[in-house]
Length: 304
Image (cartoon, rainbow, N blue to C red):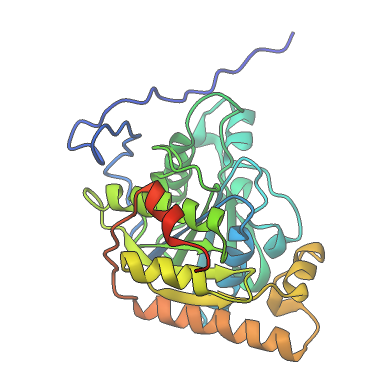
């Protein structure tokens, strides 16, 4: 008879110190578990906007610069790293379950996999649907990496975070990040989600070092609506990736853009990723943005 394994997800409770914003109920990560000296970026944005594509190609660009990169997927779908590894990786939660959550029994090769150009890949996964909290999963993943000394020789860590869900759990990567980047398209729904994420980053910035690092326009020929919003609240565009078929095909081929057959449009996209990676490595100036009220976004966007 199979035993039922109960995942040890903690109850959400207000932190023992200042909450992250009025009325906030947040998962508080162990303050002793810090990533270290690596530059840490958290990638957010509306569900389906292309965060995993952006994260994986940004990781590849950093690796092209000679940096030691670790990408952590924070989505139960666990598809963040498949273009880097050419396969769907098991999640940290899956692997912990195989050893009945005795983390001391795990080896690094059980949950860390090497991808394109040496990028190290981890899929944190998430709790079963309707149970637990994603913040616990993020915390356990970072703790495992720390215990196995896998962060000591890392230059860049990229968290690729689940969609536009900015609850306390999936905002947890912000507690580790230096800069948060928001991926958006030039449309109302994407920008509405971006505004919510700006709110979450502002809440976390009260107690943690994370700051806004800029906006990445994706799958968009134009950026006029994004720019209208950015100008209003104090954000800046960090990079722009048009809606090109070569990007779609790279996902279908399960590879990064740096592995596709050469073409003029591909070269332009590769250069933009390398430019973005170089700018992030140098350290973008933190941005102070004031999110808008929902109704104000509705009134702001659109054509006169």
